[in-house]
Image (cartoon, rainbow, N blue to C red; front, side, top):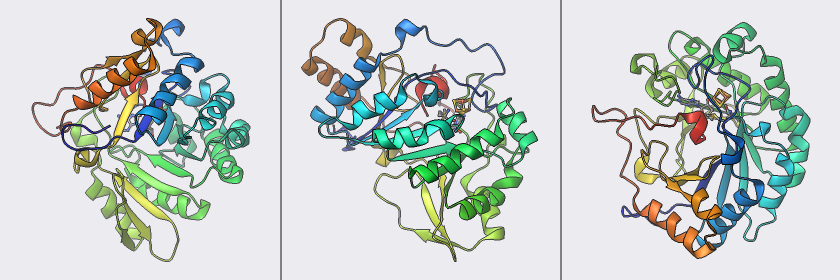
Length: 326
Ligand code: SAM
Ligand code: SF4
């Protein structure tokens, strides 16, 4: 799937639920975010069919399951097993907040999941409760260990630093990852919170993240892999890498190879897209594979050059991150 800027799209992010058991302050309001009605959420059969079309007809090679919190989807190992048995079979990964992962990690591995990213913004229990509005740090840490034991590796730890909240823990989180054998990723916060409270001056920039890391570690640049959103460094004296995803200050739109499917079956050609393509309506209206393929190709063909978050013309998408799938 090539767009008009020559970008080839091989990576599909699939949100399998918009629900969540945390309420991270940079993502959701404390209360009052309506979930999608169940009837609007794609069934397993529908998800599997769309991903089969993606892998068989459109060149999708990687599928990341996300949400909301993807572990809240019932029967997740069965869904993963069905996706893993597609021909050709996509590389399957998952982004999760880690709650409940300790119970399900080995079942997911057995079903064919390759890797997980676990979000963790702080190592302090009280602060975790402030950021996520739930007291669940211990569950996340247990989930991380279980993922490593189950072989869902490399296990990546994702953190979103926010000024005055957890930016003093950047080096501590990296040290935690070195000791645990995880790969650390820091993500610049983006204007995708449901409540519209994002403020540029609270975002911690990639440069600031690197400066904080540089105070404690020697960082050796790692050559960037094709289309990888993260810039990576190896922490000298270890095999661990630390990455920074600088979506705002160093956007990587020119190399973007991603397309996204929301839990209610809308195809988005960009995280920041303001238009969607309604694949669910086609699916439920009886469309054949060729028609779904054509709609998908048309969506990618219409992809814009980039998101321009840092420009005055920037417009937020209507859906928040939790409903798009991060
Ligand atoms: N619930 C899962 C989790 O937290 O990993 C998956 C969905 S979550 C939306 C995916 C990733 O997006 C997480 O790593 C989270 O920290 C990140 N995220 C959420 N809101 C964000 C924002 N406003 N800016 C940058 N990253 C954000
Ligand atoms: Fe839930 Fe993930 Fe959003 Fe936190 S970042 S509220 S865990 S969807």
